[in-house]
Length: 198
Image 1 (cartoon, rainbow, N blue to C red):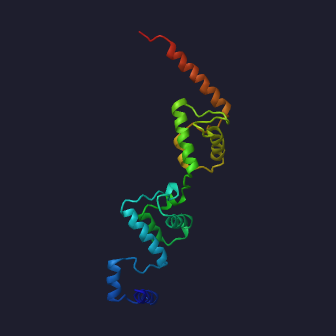
Image 2: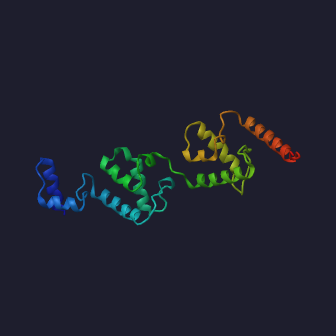
Image 3: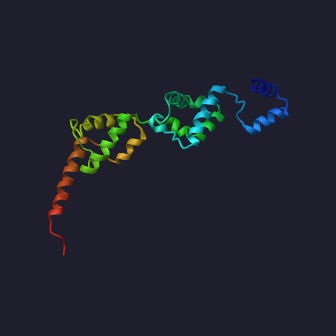
């Protein structure tokens, strides 16, 4: 195979027609002689086979369902995506790593846990206007929320956080949002206590 690859590269370099043997090999596997390293192709093929078998390419979670060496390789493809050959990018897209997922910052386990606490807290209290010292199920929820709002205002935040709703990080002061929530809570309580209309 090494000799055949060398022949194929020589033909391509000279611009001469490929031999019948090279055409047969290309029909069997179009990437048998790629313009990039065989190590890259073997790594891609191994992950491709796992994805075809039902393995999920979880780009949002640092590819945690793969073996350490494969995670490292996938992270390298994400980091150097724009430097790859267009056909390498197409091959990666075929296993689920396209330009969009390569540019998306993955969620770290701490942030994922924090999002779960935020959703649970919002479902229970109907608000995310909390003090810095607020703790939810032993998680420093208030501190995380303050830090996350700061990142959002600086434009350094994963889009996933927007699932918290439109007003989790309002452009007005936090004191206004807290006062509004208290007023709404009193208003809703007043409506619940009022007699039903006949």
